[in-house]
Length: 418
Image 1 (cartoon, rainbow, N blue to C red):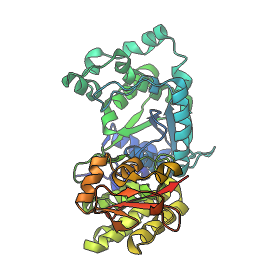
Image 2: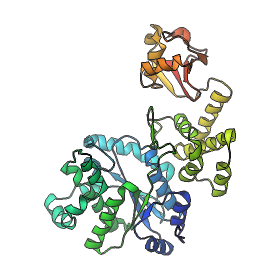
Image 3: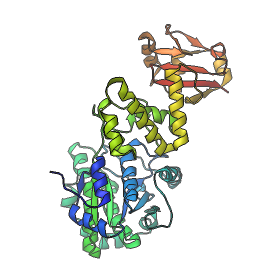
Image 4: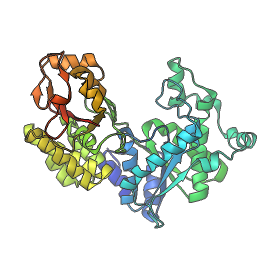
């Protein structure tokens, strides 16, 4: 039987399907009823954008703030230099300081959509762990912090054990990652009074290490909460598609494509994803998840619009929904579709449609494009392409000066000569 929580945060997490483990649920529940609790999640700067796979953690910080507590977003300017081995079969590529700084600046904008930052008691703050990690002296760190870690214990952690069981190399640099993450928790407690660390279930071992370190070094009582790792009903990993990652930054993925990702949610996932990735009320979610057949598509559109509004704003979400409606329901040439620019001279010379489709990213290869043509699934300006040797050139442009390429009913792009 699931525990009954009295604090708003834990009740909200449980109701939304975001609660997997808690180190001391009763203690944290009691603490959150008495005072405003600061809680953090760390995000390494391995790329210019976070993706949908990070979204559960971002929403956890949002739920923390909605419950009246204080989120701390920790940017891993320091830990990114090491690389988290959790869930990885191989060593991450080491990034330069310049790459890490550029990625960090790009990622910052994502959080401003989901959290309110400021100086209030429950306003979010953002810090960079490079502030305290880069200044550590190696010998003093080993003497003060390293002596509290047992190699025997570290070898039992999933992030280490799974890599070794697969006979994949684990560098000494990566092996130190859990020490640094544990130290982050201690340092955040010292600097910001942070009592809670949240993360995915794959971070459980690292979170526990931080709690134990703070208890030994600072006699502090800290807490940890994890969320389940989310997969689709068919077993696919969240945030990945056939064409790549589902990025949260508009520069990496347009709001229209982001909207389409949620619109294509599997039927069995609609209710679960409405709870996880939107702020819709439970009564409305229960109504929507009861819909069947074609009616369920309306629930998917609501999911797509609400999720996109959180990531890109209500205006962008409404525009994406309208573009989709005009493209699919009215058969129009919607200007809000993703655009691929091509040199006019290159198009004037003529390009095989299969090559052009591959260049735009609609398919992973020209041979895949040929298979879509042979199967009757490709259209150029809404007209089926039947010849695998078909060529697109300036004569293919619509009166609007673009070429509309489509695969199936849901993948479209506009090719614009420049």
